[in-house]
Image 1 (cartoon, rainbow over the protein chains, first blue to last red):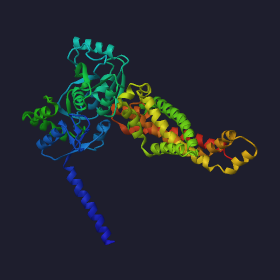
Image 2 (cartoon, each protein chain N blue to C red):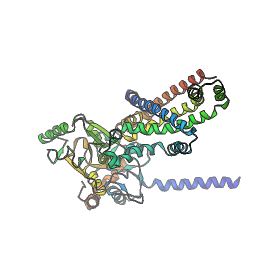
Image 3 (cartoon, rainbow over the protein chains, first blue to last red):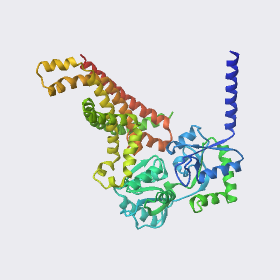
Image 4 (cartoon, rainbow over the protein chains, first blue to last red):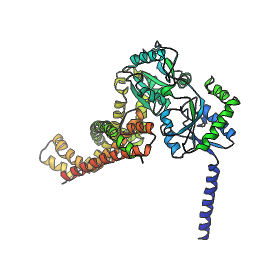
Length: 275
Length: 223
């Protein structure tokens, strides 16, 4: 009986110690399926812009970090349920998400774009190069009209719970058949198979896929920013966790000043996506 | 607990339940025919026919339904020659891909359920028919099939319930069934517990109906 008690005691003690060790670490959730933001290499290790940036930010904060993998569609609920303390998963800062969580200042920004397979009737739409939807000017309004006409009755594929889905649901480009997928990989697969007439995501997500798969995926129409597309990508943090929010904002300031963010961004994106 | 969200999401989820029920009923009907056909093939004395039927049920019972849906939807979609064939008209649509996967899966289980039911029929009953000069075909249709159906009711009821829950996988191939719409609502409200409780409740209610329907049939056809 004595041995039994001792075993229980030591197990409990070790659990306590492990718990304490983990308590000092900041747990950061990422998807690991949205290259070049975050993805996994052949060995299953998490890599990408945000993984490298996360470790850099943690160095500035002066705390150790663990990166936790989480499916995209459960990302915000998992943060709220304390599975991890921060989100760095290419998550754009939008008003809708800010109802549930807070965001640090943005650390990177990117534009979204429609993509089609070469030879599609949607290729080479007559629009401007890029439009900002926060305050749409005359050219942007004209482009939205062109898109509405071109996309009528077409199937456009997006990853679920993204700014891209929000934009299509908003009705800015009329009524399109929106098809949602769990991951961007699946969107790419169905774009290539021809089930989707077009897909909407970060422009880099498509160029990355075209480069790696050799499939003739081409961008079409204007690039999108602002409005439903949010104001850059930031670190998602629980609303009551103001302490951690301050730490991340300070770390981002330092990393930006020292040129770390633009260096890491250039390495992964091929251009400076930092902000 | 956000009760308002639960109440607001209820009609949307109820609408999506129609999609779930459609998927369930179509795949069960197709699956029942497949199951009956393969059960008969399993009872065939020809070794090749027998092994073929056995192989089918072995493969579809031995792999997860999710994997089967992914192979049919994402896997077949990658084959260039298939995309240019007439089959693509069906396989292009996520709805038919899901039906195909569900029907083949439930067909495999149904064939096993019916096969064992056929085998439990006492030879004496069939011999009694033969001694009265009734043809084999009529014995099969009027004696063996009714007994087999009665024998397999409890197991088949289980299969229907498993299939009902299996249809939730349709959301992985972009279909907006009950689970798909629940996930969609969660993606804008970030409140999984409330929405999944309502969705779970609807599934439970459907199971309740199916369960009682089978119980009623069991009683009606008991002998």
